[in-house]
Amino acid sequence: MPAMDTHPQAREARADLDAINRPTWARRDTVREYERLQGFTDVGEQAALDFVADRVRGRPILDIGIGAGRTTQLLLQLSKDYVGVDYTQEMVEASRKRCPGVRVERMDARDLAAFADGQFAFAMFSFNGIDSVSPGDRMKVLREAHRVLQPGGLFLFSAHNHDGPGCGEHPQVNIPFTWNPIKLGWRSFKSIRALPRSLM
Image (cartoon, rainbow, N blue to C red; front, side, top):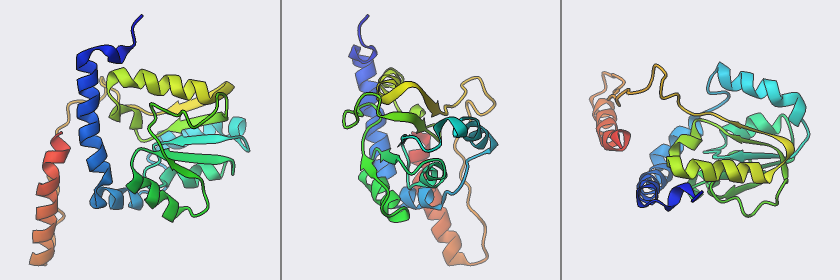
């Protein structure tokens, strides 16, 4: 069976997503938003990690798409044998600043060639990160995760449910009100400036 991304439309979708994703995640305001994130995104993420914790404790962990290091803090509680990777240098630098001395590398989830087969007992791609990859390239992510995992290793990831209640939501402009006209003007400007990126 031919690879899923050999079709011209699949290659085009990948290029389009990369053209949107890389500059978006490299923006200073985006990095700042990710730097503010702490702890679990929701109870589901906490339950999933609690479920696998005993099986992966003290074993090698690969954290994919770490952003500014939110999940680094969570996974280091399970194992010091930890490597985090992210897609943009700006997020990698933010993660290194947040967690000095922790191994963080710039890497694309579709190509984990820097890691040996069976190197990790556990890999995680949180925060619906796999949804940022074109549908054809998601198989590459899954193949690479499978390759770097030990036999019986676990891969935990989250993805949007296209049949769920949030499907089809539209971006909204949310401007926190303040009586300070300068702050209100600045917040309005930032929200309106971010709208085209949200629509993409």
